[in-house]
Image (tube, rainbow, N blue to C red; front, side, top):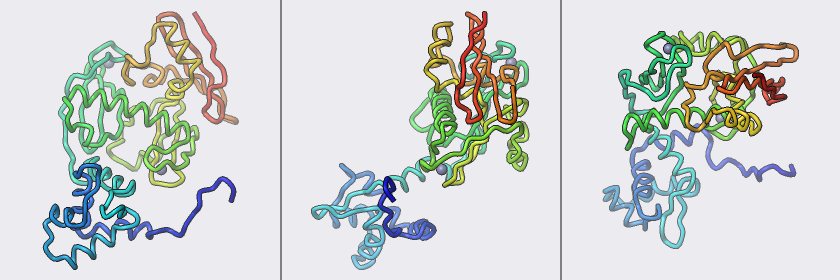
Length: 302
Ligand SMILES: [Zn+2]
Ligand SMILES: [Zn+2]
């Protein structure tokens, strides 16, 4: 098909790919290459690094990785993109660690009461909440890797920027996990979340409309506030900036049009039309989103 990638027969059956790493020596080989200069080592260097004296056994396992995860170039074995991704999946920390962070002060202020929010982390879920008015402002998964080599304050900042990026990308139809197509649809209730106890108090449960995002290729799905679309529209960003709202300086949880249900009005359901009002020191920027969740019009009110 024109414009489609050349779809060679799969090098490995998808489920066999995971099976491949059931032998720890294979992961050790990938990690040895990751730690090597230029991600490349000669045969004997890898064998040395993983400490496998049995050459037959070592060759057997290296062969299993060669092609998809590792390639041989001029007598050296090089870590391929797929090999990097295996390491990355492990380094996110989600498979083997589950750190917790007791509530600590977070930057910004509560959109409802101006109180100081707190950040907490448990079960791979980061929560920013206001203890003063007992409101959950934003909650989203965050990988344990986010706490590596960072102070807690830096990790909170990374959570803000990463969540913002993920919501923007996915609500624009691109999966940040697998690059697949994400369907974007309005919904008035985060139904799938009802099955998960930990989402019992979904932070945006009171919003009259949410986006249901679902990847057509991988298992990613999410419910996010519709206000996130405002972050991606240059006209809106410009209008907000001209009225004193610097989106880069304020964390996600300090943006009323993302957090506060009062900023969201459903104008129609067939087809869907939703208005998001962004309050600013210089008046309200009203943004209407069309049935596809795209910005349709922007109006300014004093
Ligand atoms: Zn508050
Ligand atoms: Zn995906």
